[in-house]
Each structure stands twice: as structure tokens, then as C-alpha cells.
Image 1: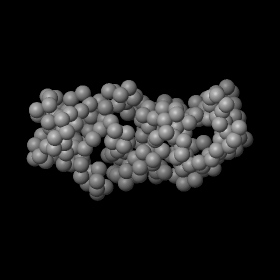
Image 2 (image 1 turned 90 degrees about the vertical axis):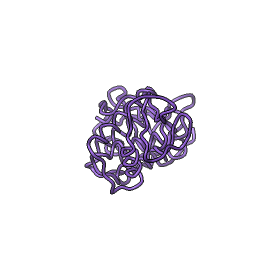
Image 3 (image 1 turned 120 degrees about the vertical axis):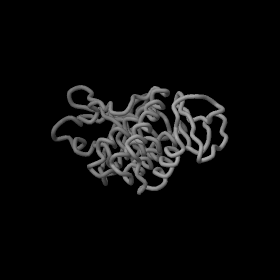
Image 4 (image 1 turned 30 degrees about the horizontal axis):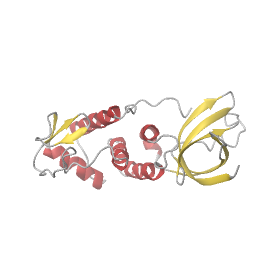
Length: 229
């Protein structure tokens, strides 16, 4: 089979037999793919040090005839996040793993941009900023300026409501109140890295994100398994 090469980000790796790994990547040209990394768990394997999350990777693989392909070579490039953001970065990769399934042609550009947003935000809000951007790019959430149900623009001075994973105007439903101040704060924070959010705003934002993830069957935040051990 012909070999293919391209840029990639490692999403997860799963032990296979005593010596190998099944690795899931988001690739620039081919979306999400699963590859067998034969012998990658051996101490002297050239894959062992390079198969790391949160790095820019260049991989070469051989397509499978009917199913999973085989990893042939990998080159590890620059880190995508500072070390202080590593746990948040892994959380973001876990969310991306739930959003983009094998064969999905999308994901690489969306995750790359979301990591950039995360990298430019304070540590207390980096995860929420990165995940929200990923959800936006995936079409699961929208902006805070309009009702997600009827599409009408809502004056910035008015509160809105959060109900079952949707931000709505007062005419479209009832639910948890989202104040005008919170709407303005998160909108500004997403567009300007120097805008900080208070603890209450961060707590409410986290609940909103968890609600969206549950609605779409993606595991909640703070549930990373041992996928990178």
C-alpha cells in the first residue's frame, strides 16, 4: 500500500498486546485516523519518545487495505502549549476525541486554533476558553449576542437564560439566568486575552460547557483516563 505523510496531533493512545499501541491522530489532510504503532511500547522503539500529546507531529503511515493503517515514521516538532497548560491541554484533546470520530475529515484546524486560544489565556480560564472555541468551531455553541433558538439579536444590557445546552432570550424559554455582565465578560474574554473573569463567571461558564458536552454524549471535563501512560 502507498505511504502517506502529513502534520498531525495525537489524541489518544491505547495499549495493544504487550508491545504495540493503537494511536488516534487528527491530521491536517485526512482528519481523524487510527494507526497501529507496532512495537511502540518497547523500550528501544523509535516511536516511544515521539508519540507524545500536545506536540506538533509529522507522521508517515501506510493505509490499511480494509481497516486500520500502520504508523511507519514519526517526527516530533515544537510543543503546542507551555508545560503549565499540560493538564488543560489533555482535557481539550479528550473533548476533541469525543467530537471528531474516525473518518471525520475535520478536527486538525479546529483543535490547533483552540490550543492557540488556550495558550493566550490566563491559566484559570484557559481550559474553558479552549473548549468553548472548539465547540464553536464544531457548530455546537454560538455567540452571546443572540438567541440560539430564534436567532434574534439580544440587547447587550439584557439578561438571557440557559436551558438544556442552549442560550435563549426570554421569549424562547426559561432556565438559569445569564446576566448581561456575564455575557459581556465572556465575549470580551474570548476576543481579548487580557480580559479576566471572576470566580462566579468561571463557575457558571464551566456548568454551561458541561451541559453542552452531556447533551452531545461527550464525557465531562476532569475525566481524563490513562490514555497517555
